[in-house]
Amino acid sequence: MTYLLESLLDIATSYDGLVFDQWGVLHNGAEPYPHAVDILTELRRRGHFMAVLSNSGRRARANQELIEQIGFPPGLFGRVMSSGEALWQDIYTGRIAEQIFFKVERRPCDAAHFAEGLKIEFASKMCEVEAILLLGVPDDSIIEEWEHSLNEAAALNLPVYCANPDRFSPRPNGKLALQPGALAYAYKDRGGSVTFYGKPHLPVFSGLERAVDMVGGRLLMIGDSLEHDIAGANIAGWDSVFVLGGLHKTEIDENDIAGSVKDLVNAHGIKPPTFAIREAK
Image 1 (cartoon, one colour):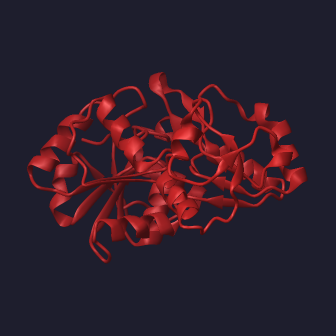
Image 2 (image 1 turned 60 degrees about the vertical axis):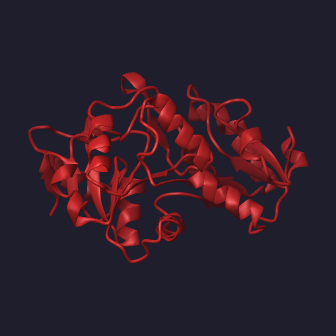
């Protein structure tokens, strides 16, 4: 059974750490959501440990800087972990053998910033590379624009490393932006090889546990994606809070929240979240 919360303060003392998704929970990419700064500041004042676990193709430091630029005070989070950071670490340590990549990025220079400290190269033609590095997708993209590239990559049998399994992400004014996961799953449908980094896959949850020295601890995942945040928390053995006002906002009937959540988890084939809340507050 999923319990509807009024505030995270009602349950925070039951956990060793509170782990927040970023997009759709803390902010929309341009500004914090209402009450987000206030609740995080109060949780920090009360001594609660907080971290961010984000399906972002950018590295941890870049995500930390983005959070602060958007308007969150420095020092709120004890750790920021991103799927892009996990991917960077695997390239750096040699777990990923390829060294020449075709890049897909949200903004120009994102891939160059990501590659700092790595001995890799980028080429502009797929026939010249060993693999594809899928870090981000421009916000105005639609899946149809990528059909030719997906087909070309499949014909060359190129492996894809996807730094963000999300298919869509909330943006200002209620819009949803295409994310790398949408391209990666479309590539899988063509028989392509894809390695996913980030939620809901267990390694990124385990990596955060180790990084904050809370292996076996009582951790709570607060997220808006059933497919990634809630399903991943279930796999990791964490409790979870489903934020209703994020990715699934239009699928929630305010007159029957319990029924809406039940229908959604059944549709996704996952265990229900421990709690639900309208927004992070």
